[in-house]
Image (cartoon, rainbow, N blue to C red; front, side):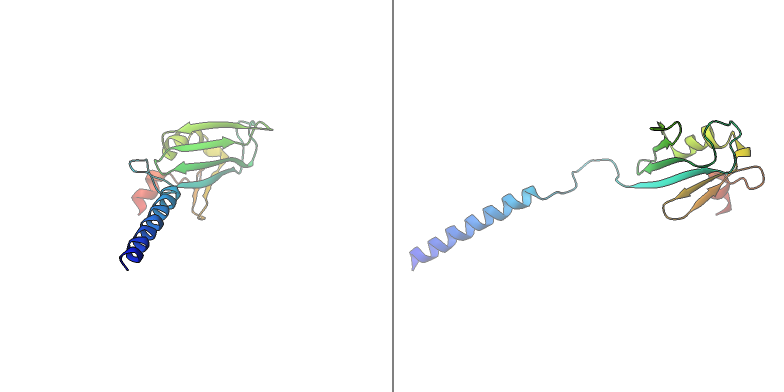
Length: 131
């Protein structure tokens, strides 16, 4: 009987080692990394005061969990251009705010919209004050 118990014990140890080796292969969140998650958006212009990018959806982009904003200009074809900003507010200050005549709409993946323009100016700061 002692031999049977020893054999069962050895088998159990082997099975445990196999499970541990398999668990090592499973993906897990590494420690000490930046926050994860992105929020996608599009930028549409109702007018194009510069005459360069056109109207309609002219940008697709993402806001990373770190707050950084990456935009993909859809003009000029076929590839457009890529720009990285420290924040969505920085992007808005550079490309949206100075052009109120464009009457720009930013639409996020969850349906939230920010509108900018002469008669319906909505800045992130104004939205925060209203809340």
